[in-house]
Length: 263
Ligand SMILES: Nc1ncnc2c1ncn2[C@@H]1O[C@H](COP(=O)(O)OP(=O)(O)OP(=O)(O)O)[C@@H](O)[C@H]1O
Image (tube, rainbow, N blue to C red; front, side, top):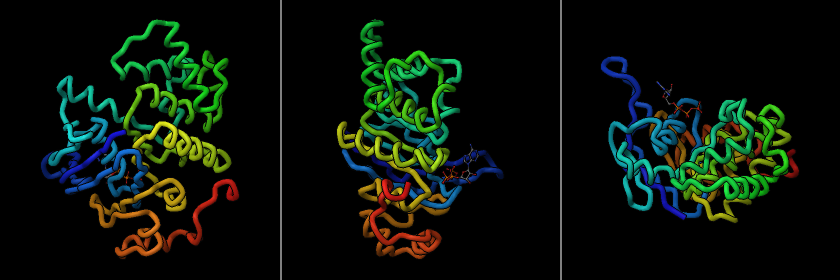
């Protein structure tokens, strides 16, 4: 369990006259063992904020800390700490090497721990991780193409967990999947979060999904966070006009979302 904290973070793309500030002066805390949602329209900076925590982009200003330790930078110790933050992406097919058996992809994820387990131990751990995401371990030798989108997304979750992360960033992890399997993946993530006490930053443009998954939520607009708080209060009684606009765009937001009923 770990707390992820952004303080005054800004991220810029490009240089000179073409520079664009995608994230501006963001403060955000994802508390240990909790699920924090990040919502906002396309282009508001959600993925950029996620990318900054795993070192895919470097903030122009501000700090990102894991349990108080700075995770921005490229020194070996910073990179080692940053590996405790793992990301799951939107499209499982492009996230997995199409030629690599899924078991090997998961074993690759174990590298982030810094340990080099012997073959038997690796095989045992891959089996355990596949069981954790409800995929038959006997299929470890098959390539991603032999699996459905939902199953592949479960493989990418197993690969992220292979790194033994304290924090998982889930960036629109169901938006590339058929509606029929979205609920399965979300329920799995909820189950794993409870079991492993994961800290999760959960990015989605789907407010119903955020209501189902998240304890707390931040609303992002044009690179800034405009509102944060307990999910129920932000979504039931939004204080910012932009949040009200987002909510107005969603047809039914009355009750707590029930995926089992909806799919
Ligand atoms: N690699 C990049 N180079 C230049 N500009 C980028 C890059 N990635 C994102 N941007 C720009 O930064 C801004 C924020 O994009 P970002 O992808 O973080 O938003 P988002 O809220 O995650 O959107 P979406 O929901 O569509 O994924 C947008 O204006 C986008 O065009």
